[in-house]
Amino acid sequence: MKAYKFPYSLDERFLKEHLGEDVFRIASELSKKDDYSEFKLAEATGKEVNETRNLLYQLHSLNLASFIKKKDNKIGWYIYYWTFHGDRVAASVLKEKMALLETLRERTLKEERSGVFLCSNGCGTLDFDRAFEFSFHCPECGEIIGQEVDGQKVDKERLQKLEDDIKSLRRHCDAEQLKKKKPAALVKLKKLLQLPPIAPL
Image 1 (cartoon, rainbow, N blue to C red):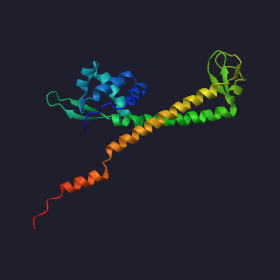
Image 2 (image 1 turned 180 degrees about the horizontal axis):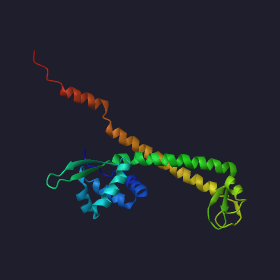
Image 3 (image 1 turned 60 degrees about the horizontal axis):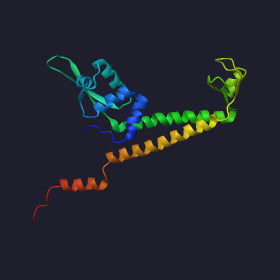
Image 4 (image 1 turned 90 degrees about the vertical axis):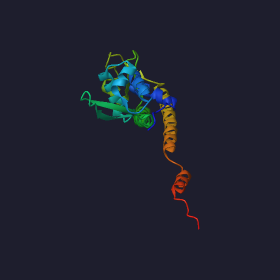
């Protein structure tokens, strides 16, 4: 397996956004080669081995990194060698964003039906049921809350941005899948080339 290169700018943005700067730095270094020793990785990133391992486990929990362990016969310890699977970044983020989109759509639909109520002190927003429960007073500061006019517009803008991100991610995931699949013509050609030569008559 070849080391992963970051061909897609969204990979960097999403890794930083969802896992943080430290995990992104580990992923960037790890992407330089496969089967990277966690000790050498810690040294290259200037982090303690335990901290490096914790950051690697975050990547592993999202199926973005895998490891193999080998026993070092000199010291008698097991050393873990890690590989970054950057081609899975977009699919992982796509799944997360689709779940968020579903939640936002449900919330927006509920707000459109019953309205959104906002505290004038900026404590937060409540839907109609919650506002009614608190007698249209803010549960934080006690101020009377009023119906928000522009809240639905903001949510719709957020929904649109999320939908655009999802479309972009889907295109990227489709492109990654196409890279993995070999065109049928090439497969046939390879099979033909592997056939034994025809004996002369």
